[in-house]
Image 1 (cartoon, rainbow, N blue to C red):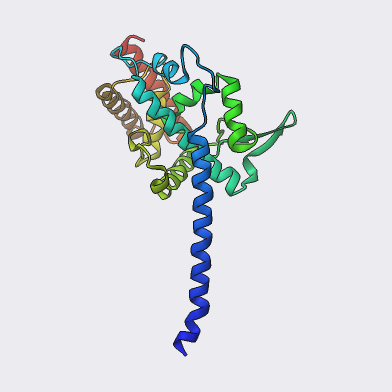
Image 2 (cartoon, rainbow, N blue to C red):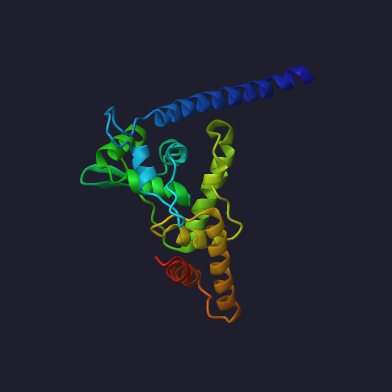
Length: 249
């Protein structure tokens, strides 16, 4: 009797496993297509996208981003696009989709981590390369995300991080470029810091974040900050004040 009853259950488990394997193969195929995409479009420019990323990003010590790190960042940016594709293409979440001038346009479902957004800011300038990449992945254009509140933005980032963690065996992310934030305020403070024109060295970054968080903590204690939007705005202002005061930007 027991063996008879177990057959339907075993069949269900087998079908679920087969479905998961099909999904995994499809996602692996999509990832390979994204990672292999040539951002230089088969050309042989004097300055490749990787070289441009390295050249245009220096830290407060005057150190230029090295080419090896730039290559890693572009690789992680492509993994970010893969995560977007999972939400937009596989989940078919239509709330991010619009038609602009007859062309399908998507809003990214979550924000990119700060360093990866630096890559996005550069690549989107090279329209032919970026449009070709978007068409290859989404069959449409991927625009930067927009959020109605700081809470919504942080929740979207947290969702992305959990999705990345679920796909870690497929993606093998370089975790240093995918920071996890214990608090919403920490996310917005680091974003404000990374939004400056110049990158910062790790020591300077730690000092700057400590400065920003201490300043915000004082204002919170005085009851001068209550709304999350106020906290974000003040974090940005304090980060800018830090740079102008201590780094003479």
